[in-house]
Length: 260
Image 1 (cartoon, rainbow, N blue to C red):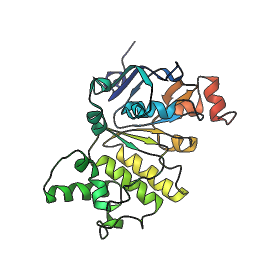
Image 2: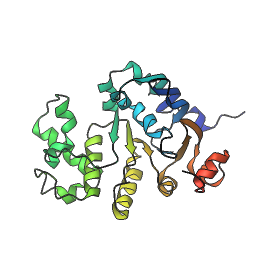
Image 3: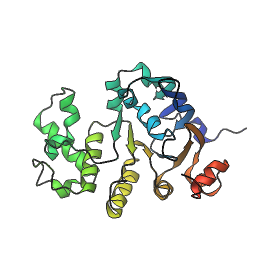
Image 4: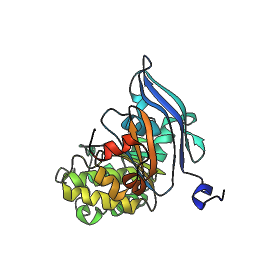
């Protein structure tokens, strides 16, 4: 069989037989394996309680913040198992953006962007900080909107602007991977459209993995999609192919609204 170019490119991330249980052998994720392409958007879909958020949080080990977690398997980031790294090092390389915008309320817009550096005790000259703040805000198309209010708390920002600020805070550290847990579910349609356009632009420099309940969103912006059900990865394929010719009847039932 002829090897395609896609087969020869090493994935930025490889999820290898991951299972996650919350005590008493209650498995939220069961034997999931997937290779994540660099500079792509991967959508994780499925009904509530299917394990998609647990899987997402396992990638940067945030699931460990919950008690009685047991994880089996590997998640390789550029060939290195994240479970052999310190949690701090993993989270520097794999940033997270949550469902609801959560800028630090007591910090200015400027200080929100560089919060990761300060929390990690990384000292920089003011010129370096200024450059990081401006580039990060430009990268999320927020600079022109806030450049005259950088030292304000940001209470005046809309929900969509706050979410872009949170993305700026995440990319300020220049991670390899950005995780997003339903990043537009709390936003209006116009703000949602701006975030979607932003993610498509950001994938030029980052690998993006996104949990979404919004199937139309997955169809619009993702390159590949995972469909999870009862903790299992039922199907993982190119988004266009999955949405037009799914191979598993459970995927088809979910995409056509028969359950979920």
